[in-house]
Length: 303
Image (cartoon, rainbow, N blue to C red; front, side, top):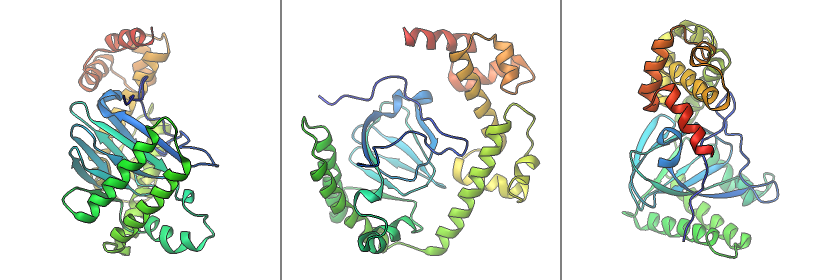
């Protein structure tokens, strides 16, 4: 019987949205997860990125995968490869089981090796932010079989690191061949610059969320126009900068409600809201419950 990751599921990131958890170790930079998106806070695995690559299989249900500037809908039996340092978010409107693995390519070969230079680095530096893998193509069916075989090893009683690495090396060869046919370098440069600007802007918001923040303030952090800021947020986060600020403030408030005994009015002010009534309305719209109900719910979960 497969066991879902238990506990209160939430992605933890730093100010640039880089995920802070270690995926494996220096000796073995690989980690397997068996998760249900529905069990995460707000039924989504929120925006984050990591230097490792990621492969996710939609085992049950349907989910939206927001990767870089695009949105993909994956049904059961399909998978997605997410390249290094690409910002992404997973959403579901019902239970969506997604076994997945996150690993560093140095698991396959050292950075100073011929294998890394010829077959790994070109993938990491390519313009391809992700690769959708479906059972409609013969070669992709082989990739899906390899992914399932890797996961089967992780779910067995005796996990074999050697067999896992052998299969990942085979899978990487399949990914390399697929990406080599679809790469366009100019897109990569534009995408990398936009993502770097986005991370700087988000870092500014995360540091100053409790203050008054204007669109002009955000644009000034990366010396671009306000319209360019709007385009970057719309392309990558599918929201406006102001809505992003609002949701980030509400998430900070939720954390304070869960971890402190401060009053709702104090928490609202601490999170950057001048009007408590407005805060309560927006909080309920996002979380589906009032701040007090949310606090009571979180306390009951910990018992």
